[in-house]
Length: 257
Ligand SMILES: NC(=O)c1ccc[n+]([C@@H]2O[C@H](COP(=O)([O-])OP(=O)(O)OC[C@H]3O[C@@H](n4cnc5c(N)ncnc54)[C@H](OP(=O)(O)O)[C@@H]3O)[C@@H](O)[C@H]2O)c1
Image 1: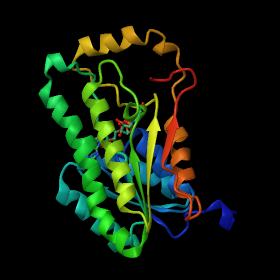
Image 2 (image 1 turned 30 degrees about the vertical axis):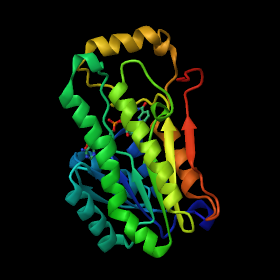
Image 3 (image 1 turned 90 degrees about the vertical axis):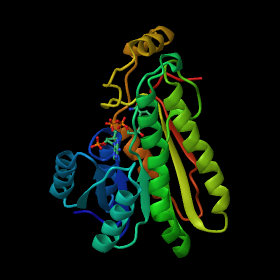
Image 4 (image 1 turned 90 degrees about the horizontal axis):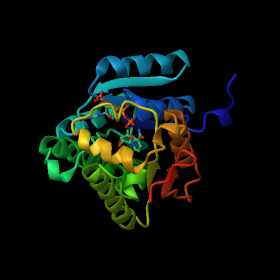
């Protein structure tokens, strides 16, 4: 039988974008286990339904809202649905992301645009949909999925690294705007996590450069989505005077610099 301390997020509402797989799924499961009502958002509805079932099997609460984060109106509709179902959004996790190894000289412009649309515009759409409400209430928590690439360069990943630096710079300014409120902004900066993110190869030359630069990469024990879920849970369960700005989580022995 769960006690109150087992459920620190009881009564809270959390939206997690990109929760149909990987890290977002790991975060959604952890937040739901901690008692939050979770709104699952991504494009693959069938995968979201599977996550919902896992949550409900564990006596948690979740709904599925099919959402493309690059379409601003869909993200606004997501928040409207979250509010009409559970009440105002306390925690917004902007996790949806896209990655492709690309060398700038190979000019894979469609891949550049896809990453910028999801990783930059998608995060802005998420913030825009919840921020006025959070500011009006004087509290709330925005969690942005950055990366160790938000801090350091990576061979073969210029555009992706650029998008995560965008998330970092924007979040730093946003925190300044929010001084005097209890609206908090946490950036999560994972290293190498075992997900589907790296499956799409469109520029073999970029991938070869990455592997040449990091020849021992296949020996690294990758992080799991749940490792990141626990980091997010830590950030969103601190007392209201504690602002966890960044959490960098790396697989031991693999540090980008
Ligand atoms: N894996 C790593 O090593 C690593 C390291 C640092 C940071 N990250 C970041 O972690 C986040 C999650 O990635 P992951 O590793 O968990 O990979 P993943 O399993 O491929 O997850 C990506 C998620 O983003 C969603 N997504 C992509 N485009 C979307 C769109 N237009 N609208 C809505 N949702 C969209 C996908 O859902 P649908 O396809 O169903 O829409 C999926 O749920 C990303 O921001 C990524 O940059 C990952």
